[in-house]
Length: 90
Image 1 (tube, helix red, strand yellow):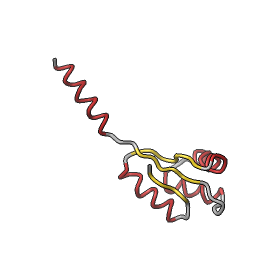
Image 2 (cartoon, rainbow, N blue to C red):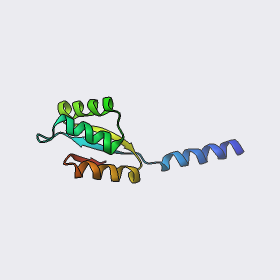
Image 3 (cartoon, rainbow, N blue to C red):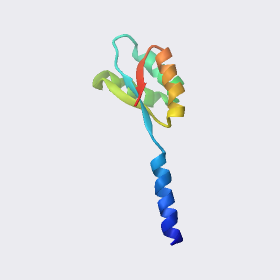
Image 4 (cartoon, rainbow, N blue to C red):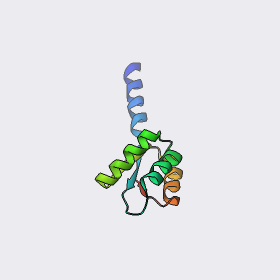
């Protein structure tokens, strides 16, 4: 009985954790270096990760650059937008 109740509570807690994403979109304005440096600054990417995201954005048109709780993503997305990048939280 106790084990079942614990399992139900655990499932409920897992459902409450909503994961959002910052999606970065391609543009014809910003350089690769600017995008890479901004991802390192705003999203705490390692240089290799930032470079891979920049390439995906360039060739695919968009890329998810960070996932997590909305409260964590909102200031990061604001930094991307302030740097002149095109991004949104979905």
